[in-house]
Image (tube, rainbow, N blue to C red; front, side, top):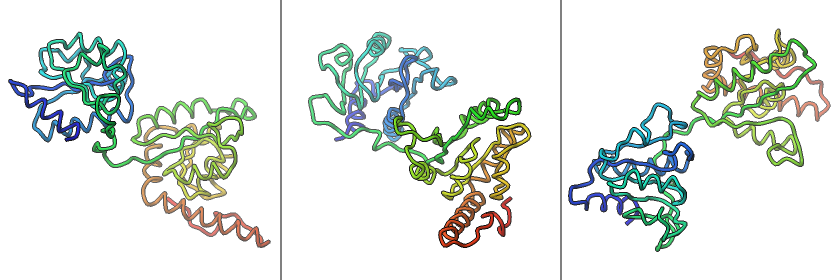
Length: 320
């Protein structure tokens, strides 16, 4: 019997039935944290409760979900059972949870037991441990949880320098506009830098490493010239914002490659960015990026062969 089955059997064994259940976890505490694994484990438990017809609520940290129910808005008298889902049983947050919901039956699910005799652990009527308990380790529920369709992986490649442009620099405005807009998109955001270093693990050490990274993305959003160029070389659409007022080298490169998804910093409104976002991620943008990659690959082969090389964008109709 796995953890969800054991949990349901325990809830149903209550003399008055399961009642209403409150789901809590480290994602419930203001000074806690919400991790991807925690939320997937919560989803697995919620799915089991839904399938069993057991009503439940979830308490969220206001810092993570500002408009959702918090612990302060989940009165103890409203619940028969309180579940703590995922993570280590350790710390004052657990002790406060026991104190606040002392009148409820408390159960820990998918947890790591740090001290079996500690009050954080003994305060639970039932502990279904993933590790540290009396039984062997069990697979974490995050591996078994339901999940929706995966969103696109988007590299964000920005520059804050380029002082050579003087009072034409709109870099700060471009960064604020792009990052605030990107934060609201349903995507996996990947901060990336074209700068290379051999003494900083966060940066690529060679250009091939950056190309490998770009090729695995669905989209590159960038204010850097090489963010655009290397994305297209990898066959990945780029949404480029020229951070220089009036346009500069990034706009020039977009023209050279006949790439349409170029937005001047003066026009970085959400509606404009949204339009190009949709274009880049649907069949039009991806097909256009693959065509640019094929043309660039052909130009590289001709260069190796010693043939004259024209602009890779010439002879190909611009994408719209």
